[in-house]
Length: 145
Image 1: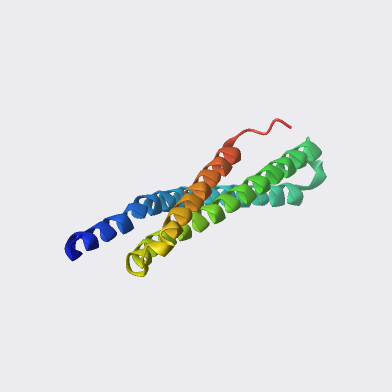
Image 2: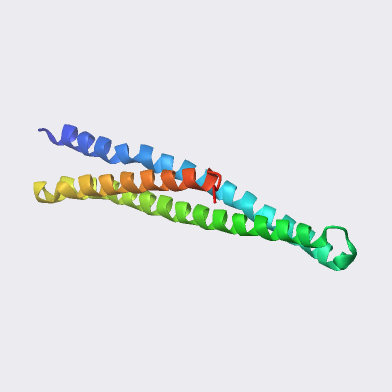
C-alpha cells in the first residue's frame, strides 16, 4: 500500500471514534443539565422548609408538609446520585474513545502486534456508553417502592 493511502486510512480510522466522542459529549451535557435541575429543586425545597420552620407548628398540617418535603428531598438525593454515576460512566467512555483514537494511530506505527488494542478500547468504551444510558433510564423511571 502506498504511504499516502495508508496515512489516509489511518486518519479515517482515527476519526471514526469522533462520532462516539460527540455522542458522549451530548450525553454528558444533557445529564449535567438534568443534575442542575435536581440541585435547583433541592434548593427550592430547602427554602420552603426554612419558611415552614420559621412559621412553626402553628400552621395547619405542619407535620404533613414537613414529611412531604423530606420525602421529596430523599427522592431527589437518590436521583442526583444516579445522575452523578451516569456522568462518571460517560466520562470514562469518553476517555476510552479518545484512547481508541490514539491507539489507532499508535498501531499504525507500531505494527500489527498491537492491532487488538483499539478494538478492545472501542468495545469497552461502547459498553460504558450503553451502561450510562441504562443508568439514565433508571434515573427517570418512577419508583414503585
